Amino acid sequence: MNTILLVDDDQALSELLCEYLSAEGFAVEAAFNGSDGLAMAHNKHYDLIILDVMLPNMNGIEVLKKMRQGNINTPTLMLTAKGDDVDRILGLELGADDYVPKPCNPRELLARINAILRRSQTISHSIDDQFLIDTRRLEASYQSKPLKLTGAEFKTLESLHQRLGMIVTKETLCEEALGRRLTRYDRSIDVHVSNLRKKLMEVGASADIIINQRGNGYLLKPE
Image (cartoon, helix red, strand yellow):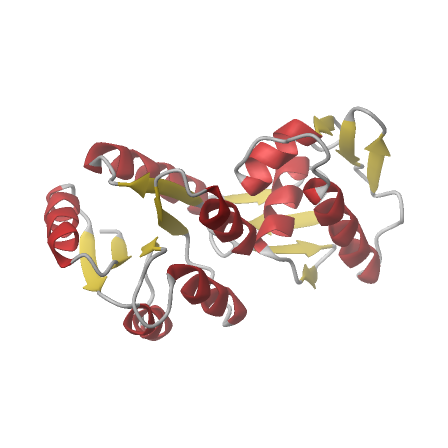
């Protein structure tokens, strides 16, 4: 049975979601403020955390940031105000796996939960063993040397690695790594790729392990 931590200060909604998810076979525990949710995430392993952005005493973005800084890489789904792109993008860049706008349809929430759990319960190996990417723990290594990546850098590497030796467009990287569409003058992906390349070089990779195909995208080079 998969365990879920639900962190939301709306107790009526929390009771409804706990009842619905319990009926779907999940074991659900609830916290009603950010600090309690963070403490529970530290003290117990959960398969998934559902985290509201608007929380008393510590908002969801801060909770997520502290979790990732504390090496709690539990897959996390954010609940955001409808149309609030700032919270959505910031959450994804800090390492959230997905988001659902509130008020949310329980069936959509269930579908997102199942999709995250399917992704998180697989470990991907490269065909030539240069990379080990653990999507459950959001951990990656290059030639057995661990990489210290942000959530956005990890998802950028994951997207490139899934198409090893192939060009991945900036549009695809932006959607898969940052959860948003690429807009004109947006250089976020370029920054994440640059940081990722530097971290790979720090553990012994060549400077051209990620190739910039100008006007097309990026390619992760197999060795």
